[in-house]
Image (cartoon, rainbow, N blue to C red; front, top):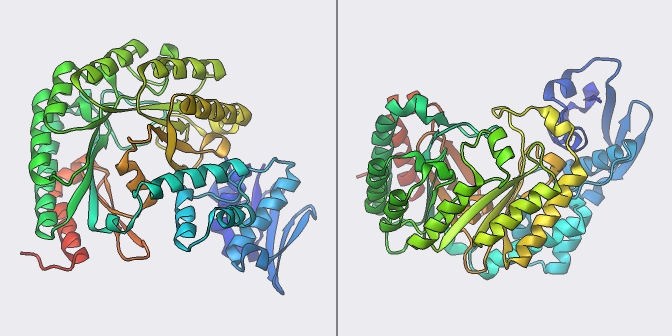
Length: 485
């Protein structure tokens, strides 16, 4: 089905497009904006006398009072189109209502900031955003945890977090959309990349120290950072310790996500050089699925590496799983959850499969997915996490998620990933270093952000490293209002 806009309704095109994709996830921007086929159902939006009129070509219409959108025209248009399409397509309401952004918790934090109580926040989310009771309860629980544990507070603005990108992997997972380079093909560039990355780390660290800025957390992601050799890993971590880490740094994470890239010596290096949180990510414990999605390891390897990490002394270990992988059902999920539960990780991140243009999966998987099955999977996972003593501590969404659901991080009460919270809630500046890394710069007391992106292309990053560093150092001094020495 294709729904296209009438010519006089195009000023609302962007917000309407994302609402329609809740119902028709495979609709493209070009078809929506430019389709002239007789088969396209035309949607018209008119605003007249404080009323919004949403009409489809077949005379299915809906009138909406702007005041019901709290006086905001765009929000009222979203609600009107949402209700019109839900009625026209006989579609059950989306649990996330009209919300299409990836950070719904930010809305709730703003409501807490305004002094609203739990009942008032519940009412706003229900009336103005059409959220389900379950999603409202999730948001209130997660944001309350973050605020009660002082993980969202004013002091976050005088601290920063650091993201360091290692964009190399042993193989490309079918679902992956991150910029990454297969190590077997790009190994000859790894040392040069590390030289450039280390140069960026040292100079950014110096600029932060000159401005008396505290690095609260460091997160090394990728790619798969554990593809580094023992020597490379040792070198990188020593530089990070010297340039960025202080006695006020409370979290140092490295994604050791692929067990086929980890051994005892690497774990000992991580432990010795201050890494206090690692990720060992199976995505599933079903070996058949692991093979089909391009993960060159078995579930037994996951178990062996996890136990080895615990023996070496890692107290905080995260595991990721993905719901909605092709071929998996409730029984597959229960098996994965049971196997993970035996290991008792104190962090588990539950992802719902999201389809991206740079992944190997196409939109057909999204269109043909069983939404009820994925929703049931999410509920089964939630109950298992609670049974294991884990609580939800952060949440985010992605475009083109199967069943229009969400990703949730669970943790033991005392072991949330602080970096994850700061990244999602966007109340702290995060400096991104390396290929494809994004810096999120907090500009003012209203939490306005400016994104600064490092090059995604490995060659470009290497060839222009001095320019990349210069721009970032200038931004640091400008942000903290000091002159470059």
